[in-house]
Length: 521
Ligand SMILES: *[C@@H]1O[C@H](CO)[C@@H](O)[C@H](O)[C@H]1NC(C)=O
Ligand SMILES: *[C@@H]1O[C@H](CO)[C@@H](O)[C@H](O)[C@H]1NC(C)=O
Ligand SMILES: *[C@@H]1O[C@H](CO)[C@@H](O)[C@H](O)[C@H]1NC(C)=O
Ligand SMILES: *[C@@H]1O[C@H](CO)[C@@H](O)[C@H](O)[C@H]1NC(C)=O
Ligand SMILES: *[C@@H]1O[C@H](CO)[C@@H](O)[C@H](O)[C@H]1NC(C)=O
Ligand SMILES: *[C@@H]1O[C@H](CO)[C@@H](O)[C@H](O)[C@H]1NC(C)=O
Ligand SMILES: *[C@@H]1O[C@H](CO)[C@@H](O)[C@H](O)[C@H]1NC(C)=O
Ligand SMILES: *[C@@H]1O[C@H](CO)[C@@H](O)[C@H](O)[C@H]1NC(C)=O
Ligand SMILES: *[C@@H]1O[C@H](CO)[C@@H](O)[C@H](O)[C@H]1NC(C)=O
Ligand SMILES: *[C@@H]1O[C@H](CO)[C@@H](O)[C@H](O)[C@H]1NC(C)=O
Ligand SMILES: *[C@@H]1O[C@H](CO)[C@@H](O)[C@H](O)[C@H]1NC(C)=O
Ligand SMILES: *[C@@H]1O[C@H](CO)[C@@H](O)[C@H](O)[C@H]1NC(C)=O
Image (tube, rainbow, N blue to C red; front, side):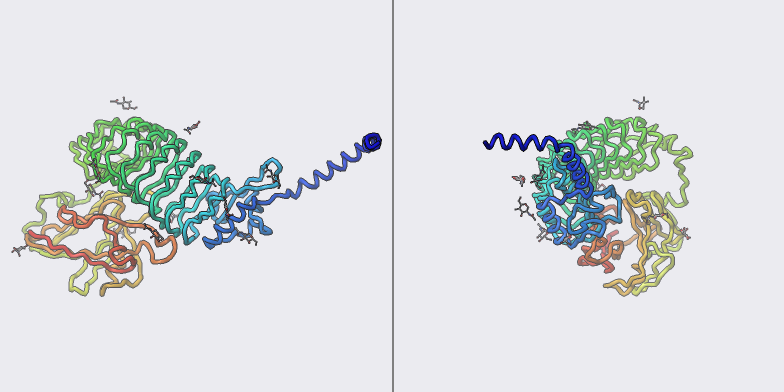
């Protein structure tokens, strides 16, 4: 009975079908327009927790009506290099039933965010891009970031973190870009990173990584950019680096020991920037054919133990080159005296060479004082007359005063700061000194700054060096991050290693530090 009853109803339904279908279609279309999507609740909760911890708030462009995956987060608004959309997220709402959105990108860039990297980030499991660069984040890197196995690009450079890279980062097997320069990290790079064979870009300069540069980096054969300057890596450089034939930007510096060879660069025809500074490389320059680097724009091999003479030919794209502080010999080759690279030398160079007497027989002098970078002479509270020092020094230049006399030379280019200045100025009041005005100008050098006393009479000397940091301000923001660290040599002897002006001043900028050295005859 039941069966027949339902069967007769089916007949009735069949008749009505065209109308019903039409109604259904209309309903579907109406439903599709307002796109009833919501953010995955776990991800929304995690994002809100992350923002609460880092003191961030979504702009009015998204999180409309309290749901993060709305507005600019789901339309065509670009997130990279877009200062108007920061902090920012991007979502993807393409699940099978098109109702759940997942957060795929998160950017909190240069926002002065303070605190630890929140471990709630681990719940944003769909993230492909995470950028926490240039903030004031502290503490260690949470191992939970290793759970974000969809990450293609990860950045937390320029922060105040500490500790080492977690070995869980070896799980990030889709990673192509890792930006962790100036992050405050230390210790060896974990062995598990050998699994990151899809890597293309690695910025890891200015940390305190130790141990050897791992052999496995040579198996990241898609690598195009590798930056490893300013760490404490041991030598020698791994020979496996010669497998990185796609590299176009290679920067390694400050290898603490061992002796390395230069030959590994011979397999890298695409190089456009090559910096191997202070890497204890002891080859002869003739071991490499420099004319094969057709795209080479910047070549910096300073402060190694390279021998032999300058190459007789070089790639035609070369614009900047620095071989200073090596054991080279021979003459300048023809490319070095051509039109593109002229050598117009001001007078006095001979006076800066070791063992060359200059201005002897003039009235003898036994002291001088210089106010570095200053346009006028200033008399100090110690009764010294600090002479002006306003020569416009550039990437490779020097200046020698008239007798009685001193000189100054500078080497180095500011690589990532096209407007980088070799002198800086501040009108601020300086602490811990009676001579605030003396500190208002200073010279800066990306590589080497030297002062020479010339024509001084023989004897024991006292050398007084006075410093104050003012390139980085004192504040709780990322603007106070950054390090300037250098060695101090007097008469060729190292007096200070990794000297950090601000550290010596008790962590304060705008505070004078005086170093006094007695130099025997
Ligand atoms: C993150 O996920 C874990 C489970 O994996 C859960 O216990 C935790 O509550 C989540 N956190 C947030 C903020 O949703
Ligand atoms: C989004 O808006 C809701 C409701 O106003 C708020 O509770 C939440 O914190 C906001 N989320 C973000 C990431 O700003
Ligand atoms: C489809 O939506 C339902 C309810 O919102 C959800 O439980 C399910 O996981 C979704 N399916 C997919 C594949 O996302
Ligand atoms: C790392 O930084 C945190 C927070 O700034 C601090 O509490 C901790 O002692 C530091 N750890 C080390 C090993 O320096
Ligand atoms: C996170 O990764 C660890 C291994 O590093 C794993 O044991 C754990 O199950 C992962 N957690 C989640 C929620 O995927
Ligand atoms: C290297 O890049 C190419 C594309 O340029 C890609 O096909 C290949 O899978 C990549 N290799 C690895 C190990 O990711
Ligand atoms: C470099 O120094 C480390 C630590 O002092 C030492 O273990 C290593 O053997 C040294 N390497 C070379 C090549 O001298
Ligand atoms: C150096 O490389 C250039 C360009 O690839 C090539 O023409 C030249 O023959 C090479 N010189 C030597 C000595 O191999
Ligand atoms: C130059 O190299 C020497 C010897 O390797 C080293 O002691 C010194 O610190 C280096 N100086 C710079 C500025 O890199
Ligand atoms: C250095 O350059 C500035 C600005 O170009 C100029 O005013 C000044 O006179 C120069 N100083 C010297 C000593 O040439
Ligand atoms: C650098 O200088 C150029 C030209 O003087 C100027 O247009 C540009 O804004 C400056 N860039 C920075 C970052 O100061
Ligand atoms: C220089 O100093 C040494 C002690 O370091 C002393 O013996 C010597 O007499 C001094 N010479 C002069 C000329 O003062």
